[in-house]
Length: 479
Image (cartoon, rainbow, N blue to C red; front, side, top):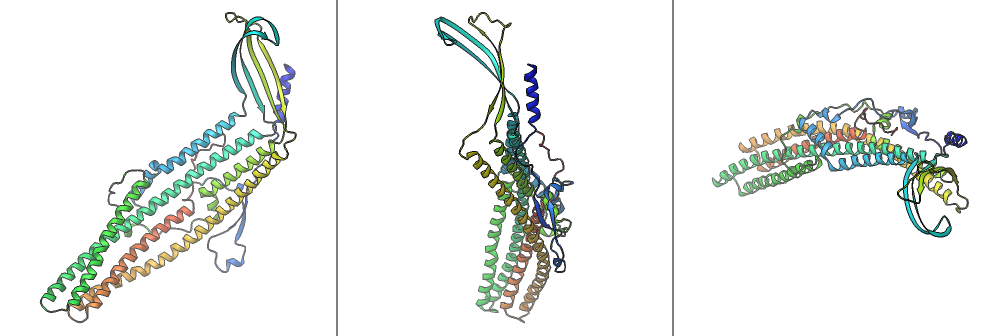
């Protein structure tokens, strides 16, 4: 027994061997800063970064949607994070991977089972004789010694898959927040458009009534009446269109927050929302630290690297220990515990001729690993592109917004002046028609640009990973 225990200890010490290479991180070339100037392009504007050198979780959690200072938006986002069904599905995937990790870790521990048997006949212990009975009860132990690290690699793969699923959940939550906020801004836009349409309808209906009265008195031609009626019906057709749009967006918001359609309380209007937000406080390295889809892709790469190690270990012999302890009797009423049955032993099994199947399995896993590496690098490249795109979008939208605001002021002033000129008989009604059309379009265009700018800010924070992630995210690396 002493020699057996010594052998077990020796095997356990040798089990420190582990097939495969440890994950060494991915070397990436990323810009030092966003939007380099022409003079900077002549300098070294890229930096070689190894992902293992980066902190995986940000310093603090920034609930960035609170920058808009809208209580209704805050309530909708928090409700969606709790009740949205897609978020719940992603959370269950995290639990599934947590169970898979525990399941895999159990393979590294001894398996203990119980068995019992009852036999009756004249052929027992390979001998023919008189009819006898035989009863056996006992336990058995089997333990695969992870000499080459196959089980440890599979455990690492399960742990990295768990971490990848956690960041997958964070990525889905980030997309959900973006969808809720964008839909909310679209809803506010629809309400603004509805208010503009109703106000213009009232103005055009009042003007049409005045023109109709003047026509009845023979002061105007019928063409003025028809033209004013056309303008009025255009505004009248816009009212149900924008009303329909607002209700459908309201229903979309309710779906995103995980509840049945209902009317939403009045929130802040588009002009009241903050739009002067800082988009220059991030650097490209923040992408690697904060974007959950990048972190998810890297953990998937790490998991595949462990799968390669497990495939390599499968080509090598396996070592296992087994033991049995039990009792035997030929009379069910009498069990002698003083002389139990027992055995203890070991087993070595290894492949000989598999015609290259095990090597092909290694090749397949390595090929999948290259695919994961390319997918990870592609995720980083796409993240950099998204940030650059949305930053230039925000800059140009701000410029458009200034021009649109001036256009609206001029269009409303022209509408008023042309109405006064027409009332005094200085100009034709065509000028009034054109000024009203221009004013209507200018107001709608300004509302659209405000919504586009707010949505662009939302996409910017999504592109940057929503700011630093939650520092209290649970660490499952030791489970």
